[in-house]
Image (cartoon, rainbow, N blue to C red):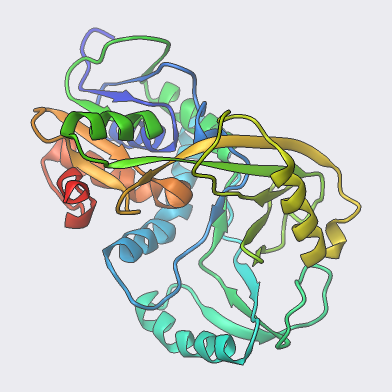
Length: 347
C-alpha cells in the first residue's frame, strides 16, 4: 500500500470495527497488531450484547442504545462485504425477578423503556412458564427485553478481517510502525501507555474467565442470572461468563473459578447439566477509570487518536464507536460525548 490514510494499531473489536468503517468510506487503511487478530479480550467466547437498565439515563447509556439499535444493519453490511457471518442475532434476554421490591422496580421500568428506548425495543415483565430455558424465579416473574443481542466474538473478528481484505485494507501482524494519522486501539497496553504518558491512572486491565458448552439453544434468548451471562450461539454452543479479577499472575490461565461458574449456571438452568465443556477462555479486558469508553484525540499528539476501554460492552458499542471515530478522523466531525475523552479520564 503506497499511501495510507489511516493506521489502526490493534486488532481487537474496536480496532477492527474502526478500520472497517474507515475502509468502507473509501480510506486507505493499514491495521497493525503485534500479537494477532483477537489476541486479547476480543478473542473470548461470551458475546453478550446487553443494554443498561432503562433508568437514570446518561450519555454512556444513550451511546450504547444507539449502537445496539444500529448493530443489525451494521453487521449485515460486514457480512455482505466479506462473505462471512458474525453470528449476530437480536435474540433478547430473560432475567428472574428475585423479590417484590425488584418486581416493583421492573414494572416501573416498562414505561421508562418506552420513552428511553424510543419504541424500538421492549422491556416487559412476564410470568414464568416453567420452560427448560427459564431460570427459577422466586416471584414467579421474569424480565424480558427485546434489545439484547448476541454475537460470536471470534466469528465477528473473522468477518471483519474478511470485509477489510475485500475492501483493500492491509493487515500486518507483528512489529510495524504506524504511518499517517493513527488510531490507537490497543486495549490494556494502550490504557497503561496513556497512564504513563500523563502520569495519572487512565485505566487498567481486568481479567475475565468464561467457558463454552456444547448445548444447542441457538434460537433462544440469552439468560442473565446470578451475575452470569448464559448466551446461546448460532453454531449450537452456549457460552457462560464471566469472572472479574483485578489481581492475577497469568492473564491467559483458567482455574477453579470456571468450575464455580459452571456449577452456578447448571443450578440456574438444569437443562445444561448434561452438556460438555468444549472451551475454557481467559483474557484481560481494558477498563477505563471512568468505566466509560475512552474515545477521541490523543492530547498533545497531532493526528493521533484513541479508541479504548470497552470492558464488558465492547462488542455492543463497537458499531457506534466505529462510526464516531470515522466521523472524527476522516471528516473532522466530533460527535463523541464529552465524558469519553482522554481529558475527562484524567480529571
